[in-house]
Image 1 (cartoon, rainbow, N blue to C red):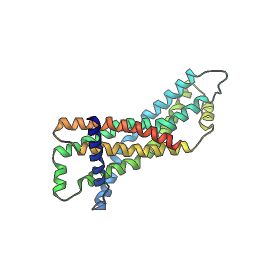
Image 2: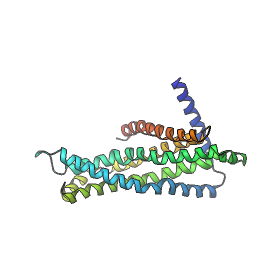
Image 3: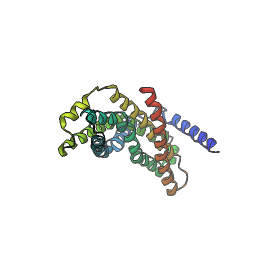
Image 4: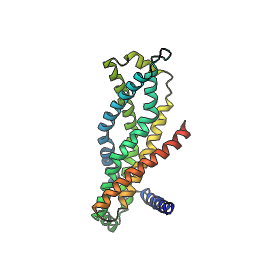
Length: 247
């Protein structure tokens, strides 16, 4: 029963995506929506990304410094390990899991409210492809902004690591040597590529659950919950696949 339900949901998701990626009828209106979604989904998330990344970068640096101390261990190990964690996982995977809660619930609740208040039905009556008009700008805006959020997350995490030098946890020179040691710039690109796929997952799955709401305000709340849960689960599955593929 669960498998049948899953396949049915996946089929409906694919059909909706087929409608979403049809050519927009009015590019001027589409571009206006696209700019709005970049601001709402991307720019408005910069604050929380910088804040969380800063403290996580500091905490990672402190934990590694305090728990991995050995006369045989080079002093730059703390900076090196902090860099690898931030680049390989946190700034892409973990940050997108956090954004799935903020952005995903936002998208699902917005579209769900439009569905239960019959605004989407009104667009359909006017002959507008509501799926493309409402969902495509959200997906495009999210995919456009997420690489910048990933880069901001990396920079903020490193800034947090440097902030620990103010408390004598590690010297700034040792941290700098560690951050630059055996640097592989492909890890930055890998983080950006992964975040783009995760952005599509968040925007498309959240849009699906919001767009297909049936009922009232209670169902809108359930749709928001489902959007966050299933976006997060799919991000984790995609992370395993993409990490093995890109490494």
